[in-house]
Length: 308
Ligand code: HEC
Ligand code: HEC
Ligand code: HEC
Ligand code: HEC
Ligand code: HEC
Image 1: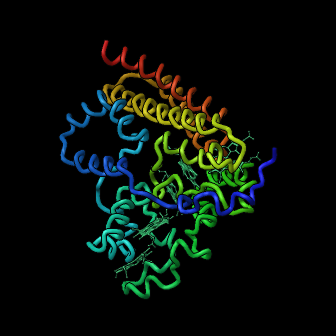
Image 2: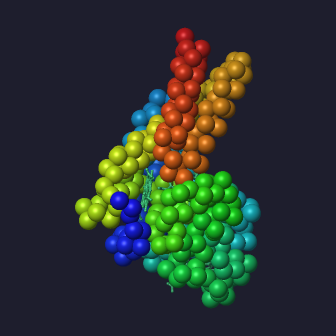
Image 3: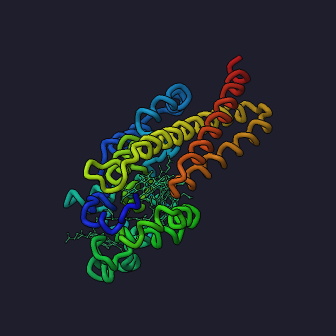
């Protein structure tokens, strides 16, 4: 039976498209940043070496993104969106948005608010700076779910090409449906908001829905869950091996062979992440598992060298 995509319009919960929710995972990470700042170097090492694996899994999966709460890069010094919003303490919805961005890799890489929202960051006056900025619900806004691939694509060509060239996107584009970038990434983009279970639930709204939006395919959400877990596990293991390599290098051991293999594992993981955005689940799982297995093996041989 061919699904009639047009019939999905109005049935698929639009409100869940492009809505960023501040999840408990984010708050856990948020706290972790500040706690880290207060720890001594040796404590940090202990945490990283012994518990990276468990903490990262418990917290979310992308423990790779060891952010810090350090100050702004000089490139943002004259960005008045950032300067002014950093000082706002009301209302809640604005201060929490600022804090999310402040903890993100977009802040680290000096990607200011204007890069996604528009407006003029050179102006100090609120009204003037906001000129031309549209709310994300406006179909002309750069942040409207259907416009996000173009907005994010100015910097993330690989991921966005994978996403927009996929059959999935092509089939759903006409109807303006389906997940977009902010469905899974918190608004400033840097973190994946969904746990594997939540991701599967999101896929289920179409692929295994009780009101039969599409022919029931329970294996799709099930597989999506597994693939997300494969990516998380690989993230953590690659990080673990990276840390051990750092230690070996600090001890002036020759680990150039290991470093070369680890580079391959990192590339494989990066490819898995790009492929995920095309919903090609099986190849993504294979790549993530390969990255995991390679780094796992390297981790074991590094431990044998470092702690004989
Ligand atoms: C001088 C301070 C100031 C500057 C500069 C400034 N903002 Fe704002 N911004 C505010 C305040 C205050 C609000 C809350 C306005 C309200 O609730 O009426 C706000 C609201 C917003 C909102 C939420 C709109 C809404 O109503 O929900 C966004 C998004 C935003 N600003 C982005 C930006 C961007 C992007 C820039 C730079 C191009 C910028 N701001 C520059 C003070 C500033
Ligand atoms: C990487 C892109 C990106 C950056 C950088 C970014 N935002 Fe956003 N922002 C979004 C997206 C996408 C949405 C809409 C989806 C959503 O609600 O999460 C959004 C929504 C918002 C909202 C709620 C919607 C509204 O207009 O009321 C506020 C407030 C906001 N952002 C403030 C900021 C501020 C302040 C900064 C800079 C400190 C910033 N954002 C940086 C992408 C970004
Ligand atoms: C002006 C350029 C720019 C724009 C626009 C932009 N990003 Fe980014 N983004 C970056 C940079 C730089 C990084 C840092 C990582 C890197 O070097 O690739 C990054 C990192 C990320 C990451 C990885 C975070 C991590 O910690 O590993 C995600 C996810 C992401 N962006 C999503 C988005 C989404 C979603 C949008 C659109 C709403 C967006 N980005 C818009 C430049 C941008
Ligand atoms: C179905 C959920 C989902 C959607 C939709 C989605 N992403 Fe992702 N994205 C992920 C996951 C999962 C990862 C892997 C995160 C991790 O664990 O590192 C990721 C990773 C990324 C990364 C980091 C890649 C890297 O090599 O580190 C970027 C950048 C990114 N996404 C941007 C986007 C953009 C832009 C869009 C919209 C075109 C988008 N994502 C749509 C779930 C999604
Ligand atoms: C808005 C509804 C919607 C959502 C949400 C959605 N999909 Fe789809 N998906 C579709 C439609 C429509 C098709 C095309 C079905 C067809 O033509 O047979 C499709 C096809 C697919 C296919 C190809 C199936 C096949 O064997 O041909 C896969 C795999 C897939 N989706 C994975 C996912 C994953 C993973 C998620 C969650 C991250 C997801 N989808 C979320 C609507 C959706």
